[in-house]
Image (cartoon, rainbow, N blue to C red):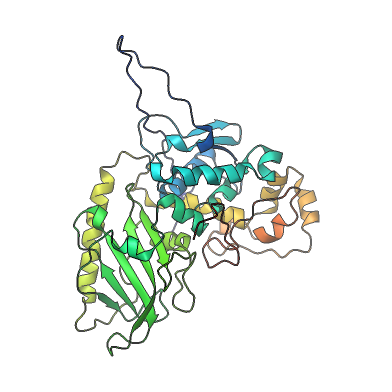
Length: 394
């Protein structure tokens, strides 16, 4: 369900920048000084090298894609959202093209991060922890991407064709599923709702449970929202219905595309055939690619695998090596190994180059020399703990 990566590491690089409109002086053609950054929308992040060959450019690329997945438009013209000094980067979200409606949520998130002991002790927050507390934290993801809190509100934003697509063999759902398809020909009208449930569509016994809604944000990225049977946003899909996990897992699987049925073979009479469904997905992807090609964004959608750099930022955080932990704690590697002696280690099952002696973040954070802001228990799957710095988040 995912494309390969590996050999692309260290080869791809993105450029930076962002739109800021300068007021013209009435006395002449000179421009005034750039508007100062909003301190409430800025945060210091520290890069701790996580694997051999990782570069600042890789980290910037990962941050750009993470911010894009979170709804930032990242305009090409204007001021740079990144200011580097050694291994610390100041992230200026007011230069990254975040929506006005999500600004209060971002301000509250950053304030909570900067109030933590790690930020006070180190003068910055680990970049991996930042991504874990945003992209991998469902409640925060919903807030900064502007997902509607209620299913009825989200559903009303689009118009759907009368006929549903029935998926009998699903690579995600544990049973059958029904898919509603948005009718509008524009990118803003692209939407799909997957109804997860039990029973048989063909025999008329299917009963829908929770819903998964996909639509397109103004920056061209997919947005995922999971709703329970009461219509409320939920952090992760119910394992009793589906293996979809959290929105971050949806992003991991879909990458930047609308996926056709992977295992579907059976068309159900009275419903959109699998062939027609695949044709509709292909047509909407063509429309989406065209729209993306017209965006003046620092995200180059033609370099689709660059999104993997965002995944590596949280993967290497959740599964750190002793060398990375030494960088976090600012102590020798030998001291880290002694402190962590007795803890289990493992190899990463997707990226061999990360090493074969990786630790679990939950084990490591308990032994850190400062209190940390706990990330979700799992970055992609349903978690025992999901942070909520916004109080009223779902």
